[in-house]
Length: 316
Image (tube, rainbow, N blue to C red; front, top):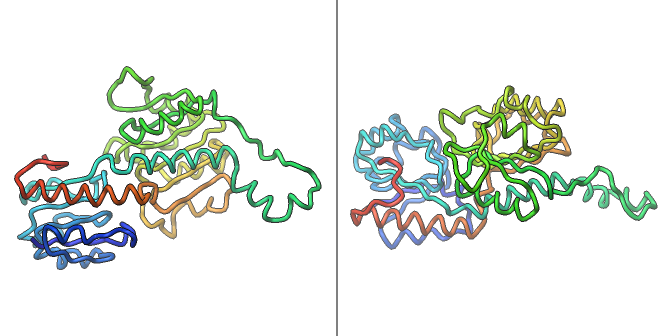
């Protein structure tokens, strides 16, 4: 079996990929440019990707390809329609990063609410020493207890974040496709009207793309903190930046971008030096334990497929 990993650099240098030697011969590329994909997968039986896009233009010549393994939960980077047409199976990995993403999501909120970077700088810059005052209480820190935490997308990660938010004493509401008894479900406009904090965990699809837009943001409760650890394109990034610049939202944190890495012409560059803004490089999913689970689950997916079992298939 010929296994090709196209963007192993996105999985981290501390992860042992030799686990795949148990089932076949592997070829590992740290990264693969768009114009290199077709030639690199030409003789592959299995292709493993994280961020590389696979579609008709690069899959058409991969006559031996039987299985695409996505090193992620989202699968919007694979043309499923063409894969089905070609008889290529596609697997993702579910639930491996729940704890990791929830942890960073809550860390964002705590950092913004507690103004950690500003107070840290106040001490390290010498201003605290120079002040002669034993403490500093500006900017103001507010407790999470009693606040409303809105969750856009209530899958595994959204539920985990909700559990943590409740532990802080927050009221939790959610915007999701189907009603559930264990959570107050609201529409997206109402989520922004009622929430002090909103974290985004919904998949990217035709319905959610650009859904956090100027119209929705105009409904935002004053002082809103907005966090995105899902997909960058769920945000209308220009509208989000404008809302922050105009003070309609008081804090922004995002781990994801419509173009990754962040483009030079991204509107986010206008606010990169704001004290109430946090950017991270799409690493919310990437705790060490999460990545180890990911690799093990992909091995199980490949083994199951060649044993004739259906496991984590997103093409059927």
